[in-house]
Image 1 (cartoon, helix red, strand yellow):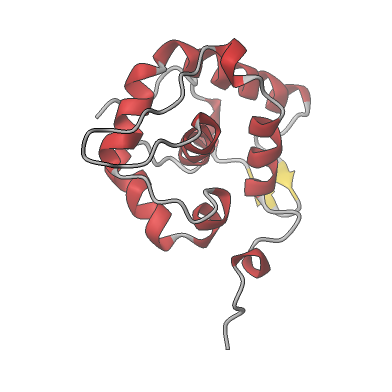
Image 2: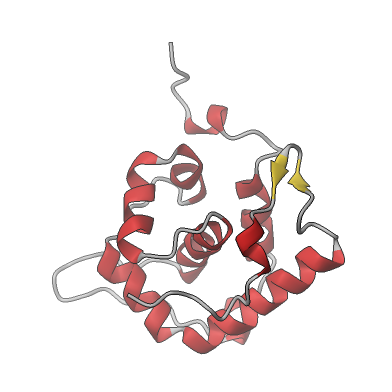
Length: 145
């Protein structure tokens, strides 16, 4: 039988815990992120920290397409936990990247510097999880939809 709570699937040593702690420690307004605004179609505005967490997860796992990131929010338990069961559509995800391009560069650069200072590339990032080889790419090389 499966646990009823998503938290039961994500242990304290899971990489999404690291991503959440990193993003929660940032001052996103100072980095230049704009709050996602509601669209005329009635989609709710999302906190930029939620979408940034999704992009960092995608970066570490080589998932760059906004459509694939949207799919991850529906099927991947780590992403469901990280996003607190929010499910933005691909257009919201793509717009967030487009509107915050400069801020992304700053934050991804800071993420890479932190990981390098902790000697995490090519080693265990957190308890058994290994950093993907693709993490050594420049963070500004985000694929655009």
